[in-house]
Length: 171
Image 1 (cartoon, helix red, strand yellow):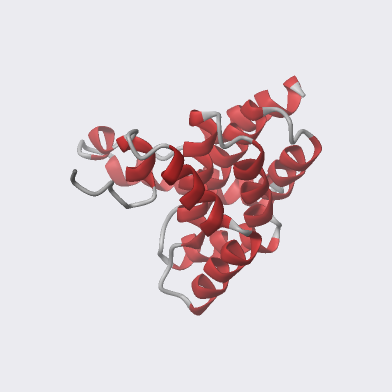
Image 2: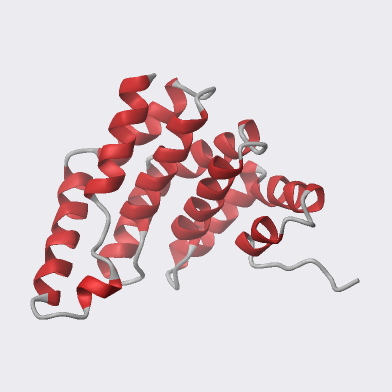
């Protein structure tokens, strides 16, 4: 369990793109290229498969689920051709089902819930036709019902409602 959790944490860290602050200086494109290279390399080495597997093998460990979602966010971000390819690889690798299961199991764990919502929105976002299929897969897995249930339970917690792109009505 600890190995899976720590491995997911490490991959998420290694695949993180440089901050906007770093990107504004000289050599910014080099930093961005390095970040994209790390994502591409992680994908080539099976990071999505390993991450989904870790999430499936350790469903009760909220931190493994949280860090697994962070890996999926890092690997699935972007709407350029490569980003859309990575999103499709995540979807084909079972990432959507794994994230929805984590959402179902750990909805009460705020950090895990937040990571799940971010992973779903990152994987499912995209102008490609497959993006519609990814959204439908998430809906078929029960993601809409799970997110709406949590929103209804926590309407006073603005950050939970904000994550889903919705806000509680004014009193």
